[in-house]
Length: 141
Image 1 (cartoon, rainbow, N blue to C red):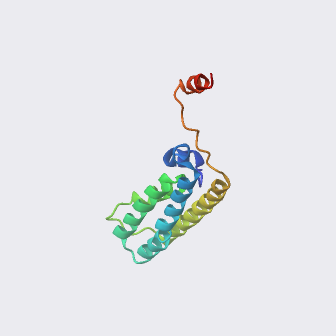
Image 2: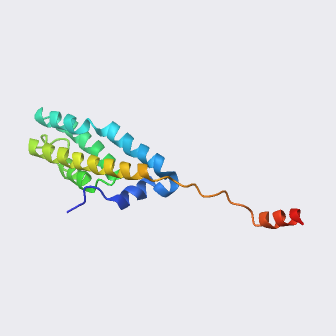
């Protein structure tokens, strides 16, 4: 079974080592802010038998989840997307599966956010050119 949250793929995309903990926390916050309404909108599209709207929402959620390490959610969305725009909207039980997978991903991301918030990103010291120590010693003598 695919993981709810794949930390390794998340960090490959978000680049914690490049951007630091603050920026990575902001990415998590933005994901939640911009996707929080998608599962309920998907449920409404499915209930209304609006296949094209459901497909658009599935596509949006799939891409967002994949970028956040949400392998299982992205996989579910992909499976439902394969029905295509011309097919009727997926059954409501799929909406419930997606809502659960989304909720689980958000919970995992919030845990990761809390963990990152505890870490201080230490910036590496500025690089000195090779001769700086020599110059400092030279000035003393």
